[in-house]
Length: 514
Image (cartoon, rainbow, N blue to C red; front, side):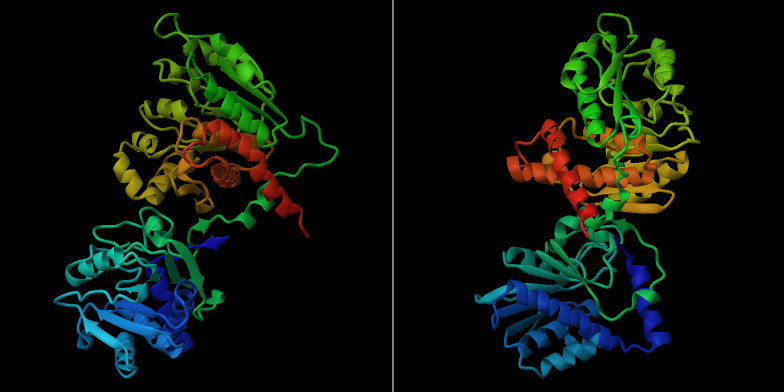
């Protein structure tokens, strides 16, 4: 599992290495430049002409050093500086002086940006590093536009210039990289949008900072190898009771598919038994669409315009249905009937693990105050739902999903899975990013599959945080496999459910390999 490090933590680690261990800062810069030069060699032909766009800070020093190393490997280098060489300080000034004696063509672009040489095959972006927390201005903004306009492979040094390494925000112009070479550990801004969109393929290079010196915790980033240890065991002598019984409270008239998708995912996750509790009128549809699940009917609101949705009269029946269950999923397709909050309110204090999604989150948000869960719970909002829960604009949630997920976790005591292109999971153990998935999953019903998947894992005894991590990764991986077969445009949530076995087989194969 990868762990991120913030730009501030990275600076502190480097300063400690310089002061306490005695590592020369120029040595780290040379190691960084070597990694950038190696990455450049993967995208540009040997001996070809490369453009290095460098700012006056350490990031620009890395770029100047990489330009020198590229020429030493037989390539040609042109360097565009965003400021005059005398404006460079520290190690960057040393690298700029060295470069001036290597026969490299240097252009100072403080006043104008020259035409791009016609034979350039790749561009190295070394304008600004991970510490930038403001919009690019003046020559730097113009150079970023020129890099993007070149339509050539772009290698970013540490992070694409214009992206905040702490949170991935873009406050103005930003370079769009094809490859980013970062150092020691990835930064949060590489994974959070829009930064992730500007990162391209991420390479994490060792520059000589030993892991033992690094005491920072950082956010976890799920990788394939992290999933097999999380999957619940399947003893040979097990039976359907061994693998847990999940209750799915879902569906309404016109939304029976949500209940079927959620139940199907709980079964695909390995739950031994799944029971769907749904409005009485849609019971036959749910049974037909999810034949491997059991189902019970719930009392509905009055017939007519509000018919087909559960109301307050369902509360006692729901409590009865939880008897003998090992986990509960609630919310998909329930609708927003006024009585839903009353029907569900008695379930918040259940000692069972609860996965609360969709309309059940809406019921939570309509309450006077969010409950503090005393038993295991997972909340799975998208940014709009999170905004309603926290009484904040969805744009504010999307801009800082880590803080939003942590705030809801602290307020409710639940594990929070904030859905998005990068999913943020906040629990007692910290924060985890999941980066599997694709845009084809942006279709109705995908979230219902995720809810059932997490509930099925919880029913088998997996704690909520671990179930959320494994469920998010498997859900995203199923989406990737589905897109490979059908295209992102054509895939549906039903296809996603059908692809779950392949995602699980991949994980099981890794688990059982020697």
